[in-house]
Amino acid sequence: MLNKMPLFLLFFCIAGHAIEKPPEVELDGDTIAADDSVLDLGTLEVVGERFTLKTETRLRIIRKAFNEPRSSLEADKDKLLCWLETPVGTHFRHVTCGRNGDLDALRLGGKSGQLGGSAGYGRHKIWRSLKADNSATLRNALDRLPDSSYFDADFTAIATAGEQPPRDIPDMEELTRFAVAWMNVQDLMNAGKPEDQAIAAIEAEDLSLKRYNRLAELTASYPSIKNTVTELVLERKAAEQ
Image 1 (spheres, rainbow, N blue to C red):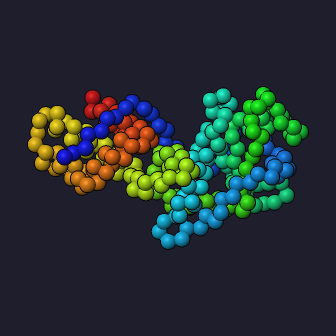
Image 2 (image 1 turned 45 degrees about the horizontal axis):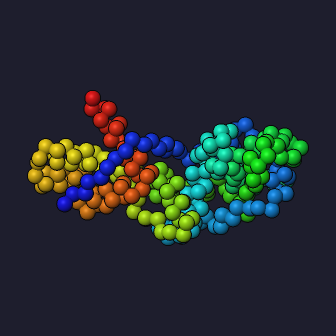
């Protein structure tokens, strides 16, 4: 039987791969270097057809953090931002990351090296990769990730909790075809049409019944996939009106 899945009106922003310094913050390279905390990214070289889970988790964390907007809101203070920065005294670029709250603390403290901001607002930690990273190499590594950036938050949360994230997450193209198939299947089922017509509607979107049911299972299980499918369905319905 075909899987039925509830969809909820939730929205999720899908961003590109921008790699740039967060706005409205001036960081002193010496001040950051004085912090003994570093972000060990390991090697970003691709071996074979797939990253190891450990490397993919690190890359997804970086990709999501590259795309986080700079914010001074209390609700966003724990969101991690990453960018490429050249420390003082070198021409090599390192991935540098910090929480919004810590960046505000540094910004309010000025260039004196003293940390400002409200007491306890930031943890006053800036992380920098142990190894220098070439921008083109890093972009290539990010581009080699499965094209499911909308799922980055779920993936990293699952992986960093020590659990195994699914490795068959659909890219946007397949997810779009699934959303169309799901709408057509629902219309046919609501009209009381036989199941073979529903299966034909699925196959018309270049999906097997097994893959369709797996996508339905993933949609019901993971918020980011559910949110994205909801957006795709709403967009299609709006276009049809």
